[in-house]
Image 1 (tube, rainbow, N blue to C red):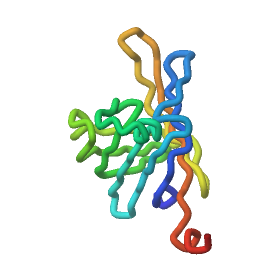
Image 2: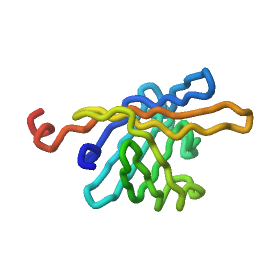
Image 3: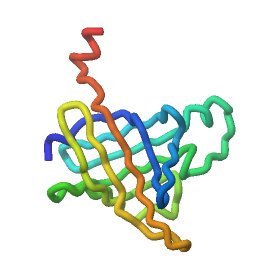
Image 4: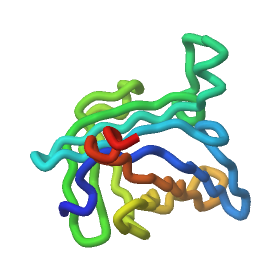
Length: 140
C-alpha cells in the first residue's frame, strides 16, 4: 500500500469513448491527488484555462472537479469512498480505479469500463507524477 502514499500531480487525463480519445481538464491539465497512511485521500482536477477565464461556474467533467474521503487498495485496484465533493451527487459513492503502472515517480489510474446509453464503452486514463518530498523541494 505504501507505494501510493504521498502527493501526485496530474500529467494527463484522457477520456476514451469508443475509438475516440479526448483530453479533459486542459492540455496540460492541472490536478493533485493525495493518499495518506491513515486511509484518507483527496483529489482536485482543473482545466487551467477555465481558472484563467475566471468563470465561477464549471463543468465538473472537463473544467473542475474535487472530492475527498477514504481510500483502500486491493491488489491492482484502488477505491475512493467519497465523503465530500464539488458535485453533491457524488457524495456517498465510490470510484474504483485500476492501477496500470506504478513506480517511484508515476502511476496510471484507469476507470472501470462503462457503457453509455449509446452503447459505447468508455474509460478515463489518469497519469499522475509523484510530487517531490520536502527535502527535494528544499534543494531547489
